[in-house]
Image (tube, rainbow, N blue to C red; front, side):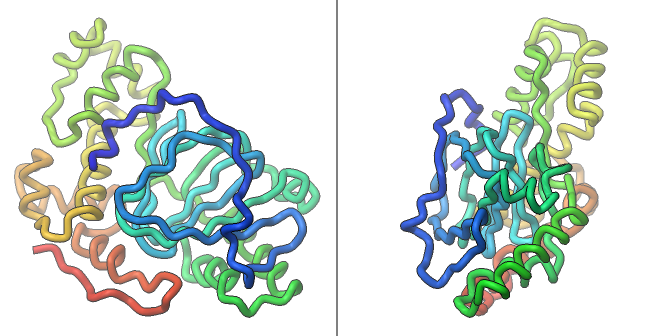
Length: 293
């Protein structure tokens, strides 16, 4: 599966949480719904939107969330906030234990939690936020305990924003076409002069557009795209090595690739792979740690 080759073109549908899929022991306060779903690797949840805002967390596995503004890679140490009414699609890059909190807008406004939550973003999940989310699904919740845990999640949410695994998508037509060419082949070495000619503009204009549309230089944006491709490969190929990834992504050496990967994600490729695969998830039983060769 190459999820980078799927641009958003579909017409989104409006959905609400499918509450029949909520396990009976998942209690939640009025205005907040807790939904537990497990998905197999390779599945895609097509473009859709919800009337509620939602916090999407993969207790185990890695997913990719795509919105009109960009693509967010969400390994187990991150979660993504999706505002109400925002179209989004989800690609499951590994077997996923997805735990989602849905928030009615009336609840967010009543609890004075609405400010700053009107756009999508990824949060780095601290140990406290991780345990608070998992505790909501552990079957031991009273109404009072659940309300306290939900408030704790919201408090941590406001302090944990992180954009390291975000690949922004430009909206200007020429720049968007150039971005999609790169994303269709993120392992290629893309020259800005060649791209500019392909989309009918100059290299200088395309460079300016990337900077203004994505807040990243063309070079930095391409690096984000390559690292996103590496994360996808790590999540979908148990046998890939760091050397193979470095070669396929056009890096001169393994150290250069590892340094770029760490700059974007905060971890080396081996550390990322070990964390993603050995995350205990809801079962509490970690998988065998994985080390990239």
